[in-house]
Length: 439
Image 1 (tube, rainbow, N blue to C red):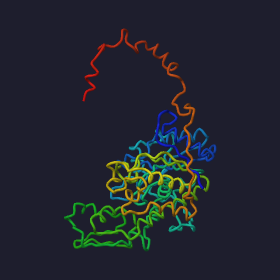
Image 2 (cartoon, rainbow, N blue to C red):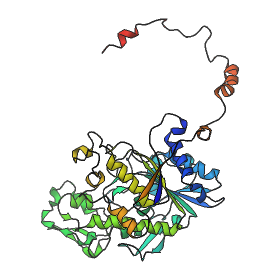
Image 3 (spheres, helix red, strand yellow):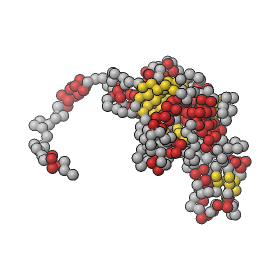
Image 4 (cartoon, helix red, strand yellow):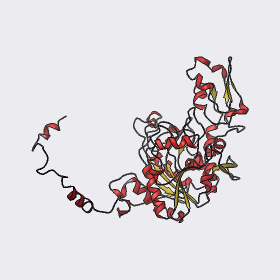
């Protein structure tokens, strides 16, 4: 039974701050054993879509960078380019990605180490991984910058996800470590049954120039699979790559419907891809930190962030990505839903009800697919032992400085000379505070 180390999200002191708890869990799980002097440690992170606000704050990353450096490691923050996923791309090239995440606060100077787009400028710099044990994928493509790292820490924002149903450790490395061609693969691009090329197409529903999205739709497909003529809109199935740029347009307007079981197959493939990422870096070379905070119904890859569906659940650490995600799912299931969130709209407010099947998925896809596939293919175990970790007793490792205020400021106060005006400040000696307390 895999161990999952856990701390809640309550904070009353420097050593119970969320940053300190993350570092405490790092030590409790023994992740220091991953870090070898001079070796490269990848910190796998999702740095947020353009205008998303639920992603993990840069302070968590910079603290983890400092920790790895203190152990002699050479850290880099890594992610990969995306498919278009929707009509307006902001992370589909390395240039777009770096511009977007700089806007979100992620720069080398802020984090203390380089940010590496691991699959190169357009997403084809990758390493092929053979997956004979895969549930649906029998090969996968992992970004070279990740595959060649000596070790990896997957720092994950646990939340919902529109295709995987939830986004945890499995999704962070399963989708996030895959190159662009790896993403085509795991999203069923060209698959003979589940691929978007096999979807139902009803051109008679197209409103043509009367549709407010017509001009965008004309230029929608980067592969030329969608063609508008004077009479109709054609779908060239042989050209469809499955990039998903069109899903939010032609699906919403009713011209196309996704193939049966597309979301189920994609959720399973995410876990296959996660196994490929672990194999690429090396078994026993990857540690997982899940930050179950600001648990939005959809991923950090969408360009907005809805109200969390449950309150903060806490922080988790494990060597087993299946176990850590299973623990987070269980905690979310045990939790009450957040008032006036989509959990209320979907009727899953009560403890004991699965939250992500209702709130994360488009079509109520089971949140059990990812961990069940992970166990089946030998990536990890669903059964786990939850180990509650006590906060560190000594606040010193988490302080900005250990120099007391008197030692630091006494001299400069004296040298400046006018920090406090002679005779004090101009103020009323007494006021009627009781009158101000009245409603």
